[in-house]
Length: 157
Image (cartoon, rainbow, N blue to C red; front, side):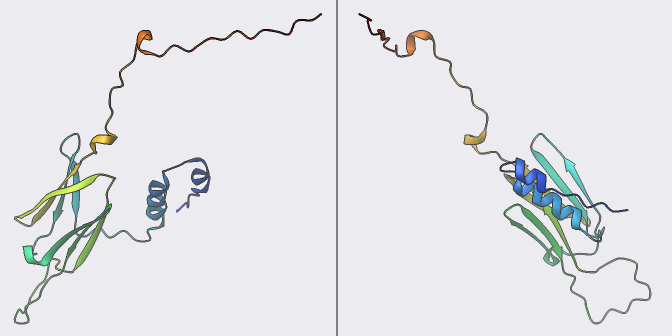
């Protein structure tokens, strides 16, 4: 059973969350979920993440990792040799394209391929101007004094 959610009330009452709501709408529209190649997403620190993807049989030259804005795209294109004759083919070697939606300020800091496991390390780097800062509270002496004026009522004769 599938339920489509209507996010339009949230668009009317929220400001600045339109990107998040668009992501939720896109996630609810996905028809089929391709689960190949299998992957894990691990939180390795307060602002550090790692994607581990099983890409057995792929060479480093056959894999591509691209980051555009808030989208991470991992793709693999297998180059086949014409001289290979398989009696049984059990290792999947089809091309793939896996997309990951990234939050704001998440950057790819590294990637590696070891023993058929592709790892992509990510880090959230919040700009200095967006980090919380302490505001100094001024005491009464530092504030300028406002001049008080007396408003007189008209005299009745």
